[in-house]
Amino acid sequence: MWILLGVIAIASTFINLYFYAAGKDYKLAMALGLSFTALTLCAEYSLVSDWVKREDWSALGEAPNFERVIWFLTIVSILLNIAPVLLERKGKRS
Image (cartoon, rainbow, N blue to C red; front, top):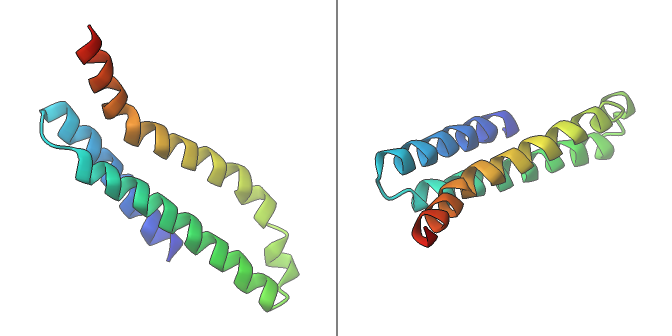
């Protein structure tokens, strides 16, 4: 499930950036990108929680490897999704 939500989050982020570049209203796509990023994190947390409930310690041993990737991708998603807002503000100041 988290892979599907992650793919939707990535697609929404690219749609957000495309709409901004095309001069269209991008705020819904931005909200969808950030929302699906949050849902991806929740799904990943549920997966790890399920591993603990089943006492699947070998699978749980891989979780620290995913932690850095999840942090990195979440930060990138947030920055890419809010980039149009920041660029728009910068353009209004000039």
